[in-house]
Image (cartoon, rainbow, N blue to C red):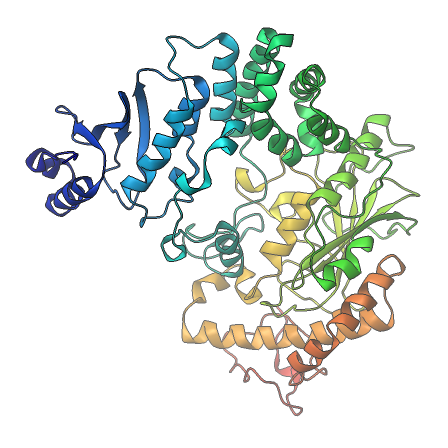
Length: 565
């Protein structure tokens, strides 16, 4: 007869009648005793084991939103409290609406059984609790919880996988293309500029610095076994260090120095290895940060990001930064360039259907080259598009200059953002006016952000709508016709210039990559471009008053009908 009674009338006043009866049924079927708070019908106090009670707070949208645990009676040790607060299945991003309260409470019971009551936490325990709370990590003792006590979540009830959702957002041409100055519609579903919000990042790092300082201050030799085998140290710090970039290392140097000092006192070899691995000049000289799993990745991972001798562009870069380096670059600028190289190793994608390759000039460390293979979901599929990137003397205070090089001798304009004279129109580098969050941020922007912006915001499935003023036509019959015409033209030039010409006459620094990439995809390329007429050369947006040709361009189509604008 153990059950929790729900005051339906009080609950109904807060969540409505349907949910009130739903909650009543769920608590009635739950195998734990307890009671509902008289003053707040969202709060329940549940006896999970012997005389131990935990506070369960339901969201008004439960079961659509997960519950959370409040205080326990009596007060439990820091690790038990953190296990309850940071229970993985209660993460809003992972919550499954099919999960029963009884399953959640069974896990809570297992957690409480291994814990111990305490009247007060020691300062070290308090700091380690805060560490797990800030980094959303569970203590290492989670590994002691029996597997059968962890709720098994049915797949159909899970929220959409974040990686799939991100990919879907990138491939959906809805909303403003942040960082380009072009786009249409509302901001819902737009691709965000790949730089963090400085204030939020600084706030997180500031909290961490305080917490880590407290840990170092209160850590004694007698605490080492507890910190390594029970507390949240390893499960919080190791993923944090592994995900930090070289720019994080530089900007928050004092924080990482404190982490390193604590890791040495603990004999934490894994954290020390991660800290050392992030430093430029590592003897391993890696070429990629991805784990090669597919045949394509194993084929090209050794050539993903490399240093080599290259020719620096001598022509003026349209819209480029005027602050060119005069004479030898400063030591600080060289160090920054080396960090940029290592950050590209860590962050550039290498997937079967899209990739970015990079080269760093050993003769001029301020010169980089990028080769972008756009997604197969775009009219640029399988193409190899090259860009030169030059750092100015005052970098990173000013953005780099970027030259688009895949133009077939300045004759083809592949995109409203990519001019046939090599200009790249992107608010991130100051060649198009943009909102503050789209422009260059010396503290957070870098070449990696630039590469990802070009890949996601310029090489889109519907580049026609990147043209200023054309976004208003999205969803109209006229706009759809023009979009199809534009995509057909891009596909034709993509096959002729970015695939065939690149294979026959590749830039030396990417020659091996281009040929391996195109040879690997040869059958798919032949199938995808079997209908393409390679005589079509222009990609200038057509006059909206012209009758758009059909999507599949036949041999007698005259490209002189297009008006260059």
